[in-house]
Length: 300
Ligand code: PAF
Image 1 (cartoon, rainbow, N blue to C red):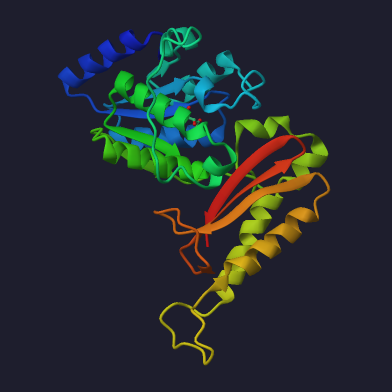
Image 2: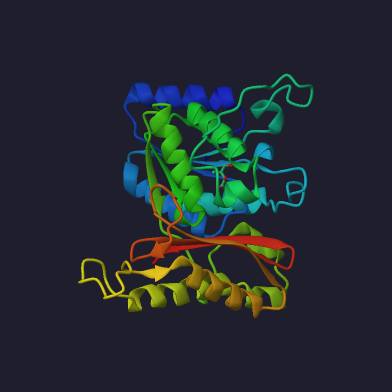
């Protein structure tokens, strides 16, 4: 396994792979790797096969953090990340520095960003207005360095995956985006580098994101399936989003250290909120547990 630090070195290597006709699978991360990331590595390997190259980037991207957010505290453990990557069969770690990724930014000499203007409006984009500009910018830059055929993103960041897909389509990147399922702890908590911030009592309450999804899923599954004859009051099939929202608010409200940031019920592709929630819609939610902000989502 090799570790490349410079964008230009990474790009030259990627161009060499292209000339050799090697398939490249790419997993972008901010490091502090856990089983969820490793499942993305396995998917990338599955996509490109044993003769292909799997690249994983480790870069805590400053432009996707607002000044009030946890950039300086974001957990890092490069030695451990390298060990896990080696065991998982990663071929190359690309770990650039801020100075190379955003040369001149502090002096106002870095002024180019990539902005998606539709899917980023609500949900995470509503709570974190500058977040996706940073994500699309860094992902576009990483794609230019790694030149992958396929890139794997986690379903836990559902909106991020949709936004990246849209960017790839709109800007004609010749890259296939694969979204891999969320990896969960045995009690349902979605794996996240941020889980390490949770105090023991908070950790127990953090399962509320999973419990809320399961509860909403049960409610939707109980409702009349689509296509069945309409009831006499003419109401559409499904469950009113408002009723589900109130239920989720009650579940989160029952946890002393948890505060709901948002919960929405959306069409999975367009991310449009729905008023009537049917099977196949998605619940997406963000919850502060203590000072830690957790997100999750699932199919209903
Ligand atoms: O999901 C993440 O870890 C980050 O948003 C990403 C895609 C690596 C961009 O910094």
